[in-house]
Length: 222
Image 1: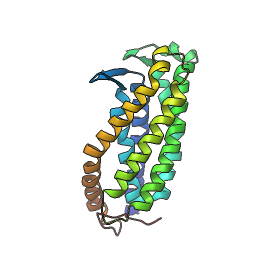
Image 2: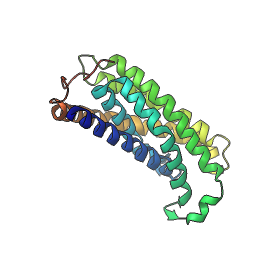
Image 3: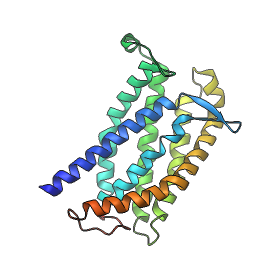
């Protein structure tokens, strides 16, 4: 009973974390800024947390549980992304009445995120699951990061902003996507990769009374 309770709590927390991060990223991606003369968005700095959470889930529970979380959070994340982005524009609350008018621009971003999230996560889980038993703990998260970031970023920006009603994003989406991809890679490989190693060891230590695991390898093999 204790094992089931502990597993449920962690899965629930990971699911909530996914929803919050996706919602925040979908709002922040609408706010472009220049960094060293290059255009990017604030969403590039929040979305890599999703990859970290997914890879930890695969390591702890296996690919089956990770896919379950993805399908569990997709629709709530789609809804909350739309609501938050309609209610808050450029950091300003727009009033509840704004929800009575359908916002096609925001809806397109939410649907693009939904699609890119689904495709990217399945690819990430597949790659990560095949490499996670490697003797090098960093091999799986590093390889999955490179591929996932490319697929997720390009599919999202093309679906969300190609031919968009937002003239600025319609013109610059490719440039922003390329810089966004670079930012995600840099942040993920320099910061989240070592963070993954530390968190995996921490979670392995916390859950060792519930599961038979080794810190550097997957806790289950499905």
